[in-house]
Image (cartoon, rainbow, N blue to C red; front, side, top):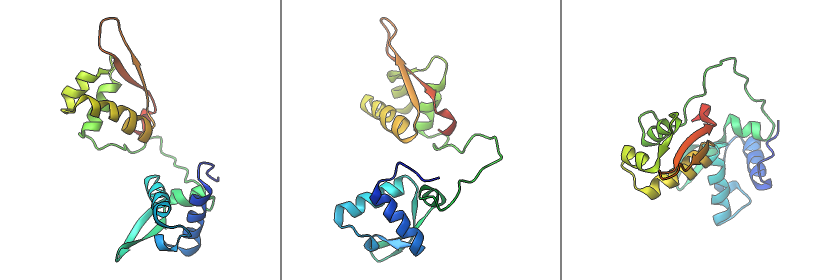
Length: 160
């Protein structure tokens, strides 16, 4: 099934990679910042991967997800019912924050700061960036009268 989220340029790059087998950034019909932006976006989404380096340029190849995104490979159907592999390293500070947020009572920013040693702005950035945007978790908060705001993960945990 074709991925509707790709830009036209990303789709062209993936098709070029599929046709050539592997490619370098120099092969792209883009220059400078545009070239870097497209390559970085495809790397971040794990649609391409670097396979070797020649001088200052990397060779890239499509990943199975990249081939699926342009519709040249069907998604692999797994018969396993296990949870998907975690996207966070067990024992990492991010993993510790997720554990705090999955407790029934949730966690406050001061609790997360104490657990990780992070400053308040780092905790807030982690909630918005790493947890919401990168991992796709749904985080809800409530403000009990006279108490600190409490945060909880309410959805998306199976992939975190």
